[in-house]
Length: 91
Image (tube, rainbow, N blue to C red):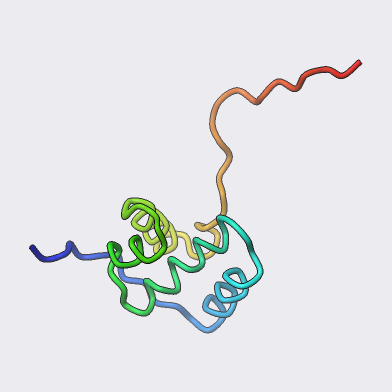
């Protein structure tokens, strides 16, 4: 069965440079998101990216779609909705 089409990703030089910096210098989520987009821009399928990075295909689809719609700003974490956490008072 053929893989479904993925959102097309094209990078300008500035975006590519920023993503490469994030990939190298940002541990955790931002570095992973940069890696997803860099691989997507070189033509890798979502399933291939997901398997190689040990994440779900839906995660790849999410970040690929957000980058296509919002650019680099789309890769930033968004606030979690709901009531803020209560902090315990210290005596």
